[in-house]
Image (cartoon, rainbow, N blue to C red; front, side, top):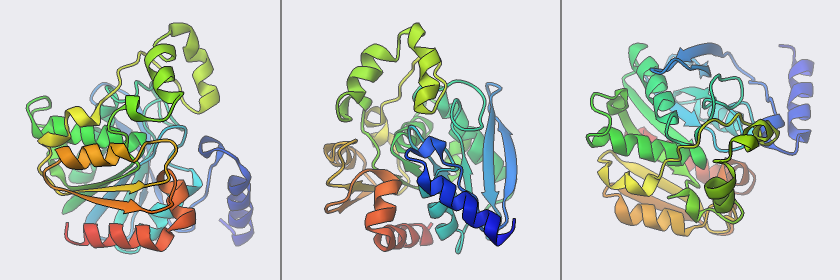
Length: 278
């Protein structure tokens, strides 16, 4: 890609008001990877191969995709020290299938980790933003317990979350109302693509139900000015997770997007320090 093409695509992405409309380009080499889950869904994934022995997997949040500006920025920033892999959850972006808000997505993270292990990465870390963080915590908790025996998720060494809900009920209104009362209605599913995803039968995960089972090191990063996921979520998760470190950023809003704009150096320093000991 020429410099002018890259600059134009980056500008167009920056002008898009919501994450799922953005399709930000990468500045360095990438490898597109189709990944098939255990239940037959094909996921779209992108690997930033830098010849590193360890891999970080980045999981995007709700109403986003692996190609939104904030996720691309984070992946490229971390690719200096690790290979990095991003992907679209089922029903989001370029992936197939239908979103369930957590239940079926457990297969997605397991398939991505299984591919990373099969490619010979020595250690694997996971970073989950918002909804992606909730699914990550629920998945790792189930794998640590008896709910997902022999899961590939046992290959994960460390995990960090950025503005992860403890439960969808603890997100800011009207999200709990929509998740509990609107999303289950079959007639609403054709409208879901207007919000950036394709919705199937609802099966939401609850991170708070499973986080106490996780034994690997966790870092929970939360902005105390988050108006999407209440800061109380991070406090609850920290109270229930034996190996969790809580980092609260004063005056910072929700997820990677806000952290990239408000405290980019602090976020990268925390993630780099945390995963350096993976």
